[in-house]
Amino acid sequence: MYNRITTYTTICLIRFLCYAVGVMIITIASFKGGVGKTTTAVHLAGFLSKKGKTLLVDGDPNRSSSDWAAAGLLPFSVMDEEQAGAEARNFKHVIIDTKARPDESDLKELAAHTDLLIVPTTPDALALKATLKMLATLRGINVVNYKLLLTMIPPPPSHDGADAVELIKNSQLPSFKTQIKRYASYKKAALQGVLVGEVRDRSAKTAAAAYEQLAKEIL
Image 1 (cartoon, rainbow, N blue to C red):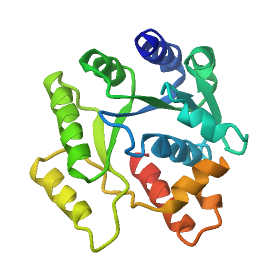
Image 2: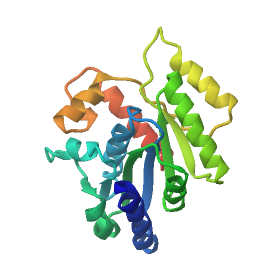
Image 3: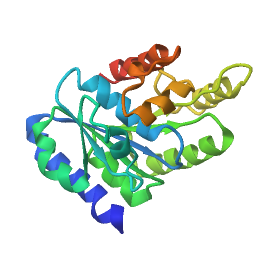
Image 4: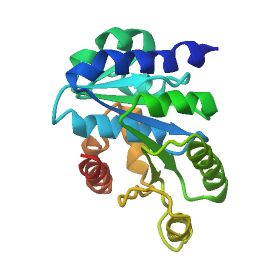
């Protein structure tokens, strides 16, 4: 009830209010939690804020984006659905962090009112299975403005990343060339309330560069 009335209704309102002023709207959605959805939303918003005023709409009941932003150290605004509906038109970019596992009607709303729907997934079997179900649903309702993003790819000797890439290629799924590897720096960034590039960690710059490359691929 919470998300059907607020998050998806707000997305429709944001698109209605922002259409005439050319605001870019990017939505992050997944069928499974723990796949880097909020990390992706936060870091895309961070990069896009360099290009123009950016808003991250926290539509996840867990309020993970809001918790990340609580320290006030992020270079963009974070609002919940009620706040965002009235303010979105004042921004150049809007990133929407949604709840996990949207149903078919939710997906229709998301796709109809966003410029790009990003579907993050980790390369493990359970996450990929859930993601493939979501993508099948998208195809079934003729949604085409989406792309798959591989996240949290473990380092060698694991073959999960390569196996997932092969599966995506063979399935001819629309996906980003950029892939996000698993780094502890992302968790540290969330705890400190900053973007990963500001964390004191040897992998922080590499982790930040991955999302910068993703943002450039989108633009």
